[in-house]
Image (tube, rainbow, N blue to C red; front, side, top):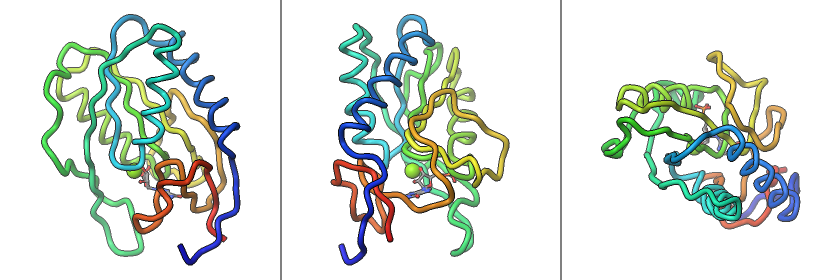
Length: 174
Ligand code: IMP
Ligand code: MG
C-alpha cells in the first residue's frame, strides 16, 4: 500500500447506509428472491447486506457471477463478458443484482440482460457506490448507497490493483 487513502465513508456511516438499503430492499422486493453478487468487489457489501436483511426476516438465496470487461488499456470497461458459467436456478426467480460500483453502467446493464436471458421473473439492481457523471450507457440502479464524483475509490471490498479490499472504510486514493 504505497498510496495514501483519504476516508470518504467510515465504518459507522457504511453500516448505517447498508442497513437503510436493506430496509429499502425489504419494502420493494416482495417474497422470495435471490441475490446475485458481481465478483469480486461486492463480497463485503453482500456479506453485510444479507445479515441486515436477516434482521428484517428476509433470507434471500445468495449466488455470484464473475464478469470481465475487455477494452483498450485506457478504457477499463469496454465489452463486458461472463468469466465463469452463469449460475443455475435463476429461471422463475426474482433477482437482486449487487455490485460494488456503477460507473459507466455497462456491467450492470450486461448482468441485467444476462439474468433476463436466464429467465428471471424480475430483476432489481443495487450498487453501493454510484458515479452518475461517468455513465456511458443509460442506467439507473434501483438501490444505491453513496453517490461520488469522478474519483477512484477503494476499500470495503473494492480494490486498486487487488489491494485495499480489506479496509473497513471507503476511501479515495490521494
Ligand atoms: P461499469 O459500471 O461497467 O463501468 O463498471 C463498474 C466496475 O468498474 C465496478 O464494479 C468496479 O469493478 C470497477 N470500478 C469502477 N470505478 C471504480 C473505482 O473507483 N474503484 C475500483 N473499481 C472501480
Ligand atoms: Mg466490479
